[in-house]
Length: 138
Length: 127
Image 1 (cartoon, rainbow over the protein chains, first blue to last red):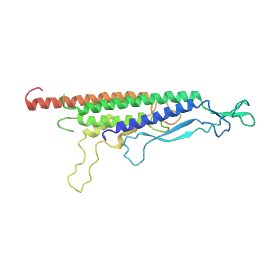
Image 2 (image 1 turned 30 degrees about the horizontal axis):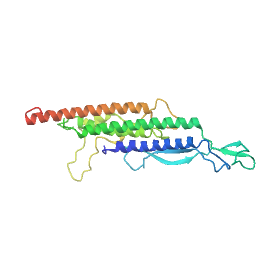
Image 3 (image 1 turned 90 degrees about the horizontal axis):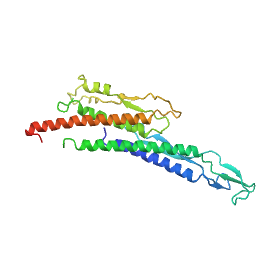
Image 4 (image 1 turned 30 degrees about the vertical axis):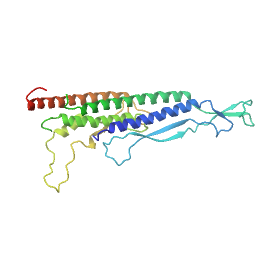
């Protein structure tokens, strides 16, 4: 046991899930964006997670989770015929952000549950540590 | 084994290590291709209790390995395989984490009572 590594592990997961929640909020907030060119419109963003194992530590080392990066979805924006729109191009088309609401909601619930269970881990570890610190005082 | 605290000192170390392993599983519950791991109490106990461990009697000797080694970490067989290759089942991990915490507290209580008993014996009165 290296002391307080449980807190590091659970803390890294809390940060990662928080980022995932933020990205979901960003995707849902921008779901109605439109633009005049397909390249200019908002694309949904997702976080890529990986175990924070550098391969050099002992196999017993506790590894947290790291965010490898945030990627933009490669799905094409939704093309919509709307000639009255001020941003419409010469063909009368506007391009809307292709945000899948169902996917985002499922992501949000998953992130929220993972956040909760990691918070529970921190709380339990804290209580055990405090009890260990008061060993022999009772 | 510690002659004063008995098995419970080692048990506390085991429980703390297992807490780290289970926390790692829970932290990586959403990581693709992560494989959940766990430690087995029985084999660790056997490793602690065995008397056939090498002793360092010369300074040229290599320090014998601790009773606990990485070989005791085993991969879990998931009840339901998932598409992304992750084998963490968060609810089960939570249950094991709670069980481990209770066992940690139980060992802590034994150690605590032992200290209380020794103190009573030393001071001659129950504090």
